[in-house]
Amino acid sequence: AQSVTQLDSQVPVFEEAPVELRCNYSSSVSVYLFWYVQYPNQGLQLLLKYLSGSTLVKGINGFEAEFNKSQTSFHLRKPSVHISDTAEYFCAVINTGFQKLVFGTGTRLLVSP
Amino acid sequence: IAGITQAPTSQILAAGRRMTLRCTQDMRHNAMYWYRQDLGLGLRLIHYSNTAGTTGKGEVPDGYSVSRANTDDFPLTLASAVPSQTSVYFCASGLGDEQFFGPGTRLTVL
Image (cartoon, rainbow over all chains, first blue to last red; front, side, top):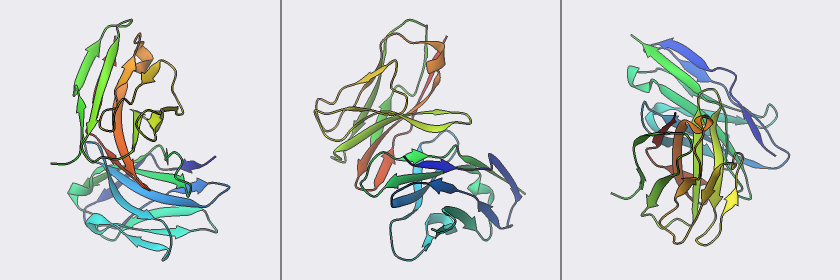
């Protein structure tokens, strides 16, 4: 069975600073990895995903993530955040047989001026 | 606009009452899912359906039931609500590796 760990429940950062949100996963089989974003009082929307190929994945709103198989990580990064990036970010994993998606507990990104 | 709709947006319910949360999609996706979101726990899968006519249990199915009579609708029923079912409920549909989420239903059981 897969599991996902997001160690940081909350990450405060100033506007225009860089940010990294950490995600580690465990699985005995090949997986696909995802980052979802949830803005206040909204549903989740896909930010980016890793299926195969290049380990550096670029998503919407200037976010990117790097798949590191040896460290079983899929950290999310943005070089310069905006106030509008304030949201909850969820890392998720699914095995390549498209079984059930497993979510981490989420990281709240708080961007202040 | 294509997507997923959920109803109601929010609901306050007395313990012991029966409640059905509605979910409809117009993307013709075969797979549909119900999650609950609780602070510090992320999203947990309640039930899922890989195609119309079939359903399966997720991580936290107790106290909930689902049906999938057709491709578009996937209602979630709480037969006798309890306070621990206070949560935000998200419906999703899936196509291959990607899932698309509805806006959620905020349910409070008193």
